[in-house]
Image (cartoon, rainbow, N blue to C red; front, side):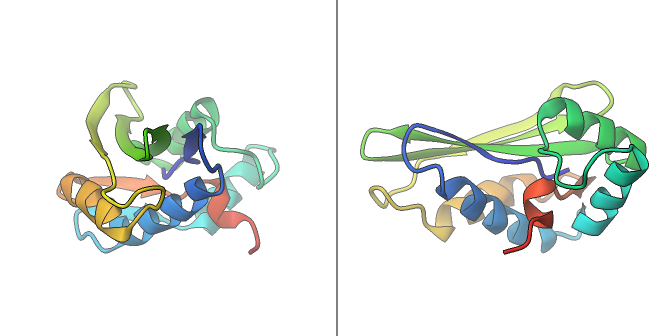
Length: 141
């Protein structure tokens, strides 16, 4: 499950942009299956929840368990000096344990670049799992 990304300090509009870049990068992996937003939305409806329900950790685990996703991928952006620290964390749905955690600091001041997302997702793409896309992908543009 690709959970909603969070931002600490700085520009909160960057989280959905980084989330979309991570989704695109993870979708290129042969070892990872990124479940479609419509599959996740359908499961939320079966759970009698609105399909716009935010993917907080509790909702993410509930949906991931029901659809058989083995892991939840979450991300955080934190203002750090002149730039942002970007973190990704892959968590087991069944045990709730962290399977992998990686972070990168962009070299471009106050701007997130695609290289950072590529570097982070390359570290995760070799780990076999099913990742479902979170609520942000279901919202109309």
